Image 1 (cartoon, rainbow, N blue to C red):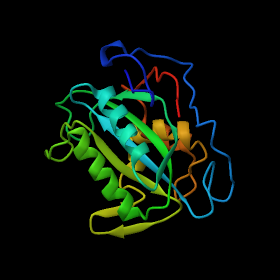
Image 2: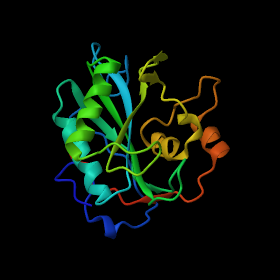
Image 3: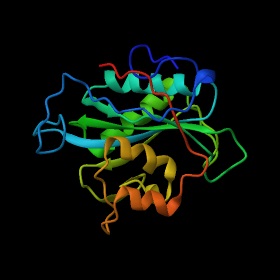
Length: 207
């Protein structure tokens, strides 16, 4: 996977399992505890789930991260390891690569969602059927502690607590996350299981 200095190295076909992967935050970021690591008082913490199962999957995710870095009002703080996961919902399609990134942002949740849609289009996503294959998919998972339900926007992301391809990489960047009823991530992951999920080499984090 090659991320042009923004994530993973190698090609999609060279991915291999690893048990020694660690998440690396940007060393230039100063930790401030009000909103979370590296987040200033006027910024918010958001988590984005990334996925791809068409073409150069790792390349698509790396390009999406590169575009997020260049987007006004968004700072990529940390990214999980890369995981290969079985398709969910509609199973007759290729396996996905998934990751979760922590962002600092001064955008509101709807603005952030629109930024994600712009990134998807720039990477080359085309409309398909629900749970179908896609070049890239960016989902707003969490935004501070906000609970919001409006047309076209729901935070936390609906269904994320039942999806191992979200929970497993989320643990890398937000290990202290708990469900609304207080269940820790390890407990949530145990509920849904991790069958078919492989942790892959994520290369060296670069800022």
